[in-house]
Amino acid sequence: MTQQVTPLASLQAQAALVDGLNKAQDEAHKLSNAIEDVDAPPELYNARAALALAMRTVTLDLGRVRGLAENGDMAGAKELLGNLKSPEAVEDAIAEVQAAG
Image (tube, rainbow, N blue to C red; front, top):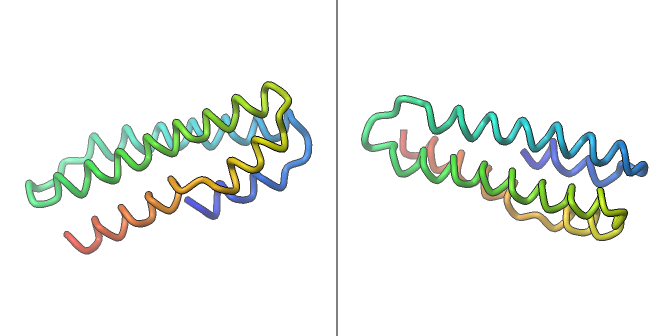
């Protein structure tokens, strides 16, 4: 997740950044839905829920960054993008799922 989100900060053109954020946000949304739809045994329910929530948070965070970029605040968008903790939370949630199952 971090490897996909971090390179967006290097995009210089507003349109390219907004397009990249749209694509990343759409993908994060699809993944969170797919995670929630996974049939999991009861012992993995909490880990699955944590992973889905982490993906939803990425979706929301990317939307906040996109809003800044769309409004012309490229510096603010890039700063926020560089400081997002949600991609790391996804990676932690993935590790939790792997440990649980």
